[in-house]
Image (tube, rainbow, N blue to C red; front, top):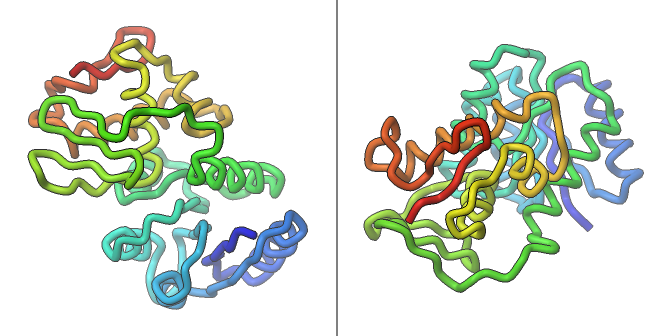
Length: 228
C-alpha cells in the first residue's frame, strides 16, 4: 500500500483529497504547513508527496528545495493556483515531477498520482544493460544514479526516467508525444513545454555547454535524441 504525504493548508481541500485517495487504497498523511511537511517527509518515508506551493511558515518552493537537498527522491506532485509558465519552470528546476493547477478535478489528480507511482516502481520497463555511458556521463539504472566525470549528478526521478528513455533508443529520435507517454504515462495540453523544460534541466546538469549540447540533441519538428 503506497503512503502519500499531502502538504496543504486548506483544510477542506486536504480532507477531500485524503478521502478520495484513501478510497483508492492509499495511506495518506496530512501536513498543514511547509515546515511540518518538511519535518514529516524527512522523518517518515513516503512513496509520493503532494505539495502545495502557497503554504504558511515555509512556502512550497523552499520545501521542495529542502527535500531534494536532503536526498529525498520520492516523486513530488506540485499543486499551484498560479498558471504562469515561470512558476512551473521553477518547480521543475527544483526537482518537482509534475504539477496540477488549481482548480483541478480529483480524478485527474488521482490519475497523475498513479502514473507517478507506476513510473517510480519501473513496471513494464524494458530491460537495459547494467551501466550506460556516453561522453563523460555514466548512467546506472539499477541504482538510479548518474555520474559526470566521476562526480554524482543529482537528478529528479522524472529527469532520470527521461534520460533513460533517450538512452534506450540508441540514438533514434523520440517525439515529445512518445516521451510524454513513456515517462509521464498520459497526455496533457502542455506536452511540448513540459518535455522541453525537463530537457533543458538535463542539459544544464549534464552538458559542458547547455546552449550547444553535444549529447542531448534536438531533432527539428520531431523531438530529441541522445548522441554518444
